[in-house]
Length: 239
Length: 113
Image 1 (cartoon, one colour):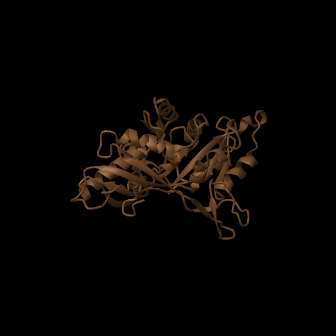
Image 2: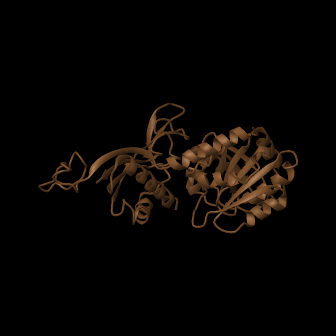
Image 3: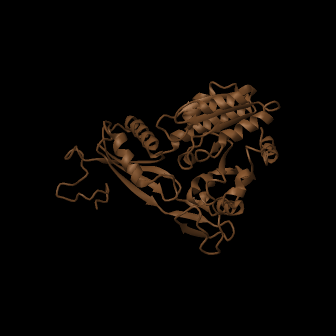
């Protein structure tokens, strides 16, 4: 291998004199993180949240875990005291934003089209349309996907992963990146526990193998069980 | 497939760099991919060719340089080579290792003309 450029073309004439061989490549050291662009926009969002005193949480999960139901119930009980806004991410439709508005909070829908996650740049533009000065709590409901959104910092205070009991207790091991990246795991749909083979203790053990510090709250968006603890958690994390 | 948007960001970084360093074409990209990172090498190679088509990076080779994952035990402070985020410490069996290497994806260098 050529020690100058690393290529394996060692035929006669292989050298690094650009005059002799103008087609020959030169090397440039880059050493740049390819998430750098997203991270720069995330840092801008984060400073906006700090200036405006908006506690921001990025809700991540697989599709159908009940993120929107958790949010509508949270809005119904907290919104009168603590102003809530929501950025909704989905590939298509503004159905979820409509559900949030019907619950009484401001909502901006981002359709990612072919995209599988929200990025910090898109969230930054959504922020321009929200009344941040009067908002206490902002939820960013990410695209339902347990893989890609783990990599993209949106500037949030924390990621919250929602896992429903119908999904299988080994999800933290199957999708470890998301559980590593999250501060809190909400185990939702616990009203269905009598009907499914799901041991919350096992799930919590798996999640803590990956992220020993992850906090856990068990809730049911249907019956409201566990919501007192969840709402206290939110209130304790307001800025 | 977030590799697609990451490849688009890579292109943007390379275009910016071409203006700073004055090159016209890229013939090879060396990409360090941590084995615990969010990037799947095969998916990245697939997206790279699609995204770079019609740009100054068209036809360039993408060489993936895998970086070993290393975790530091919070209990015994020793390091372990790991393949998964849920692997335990090989010295004391504790879970929840702090990742000290292998979770980044960096453009290391470029061969340019």
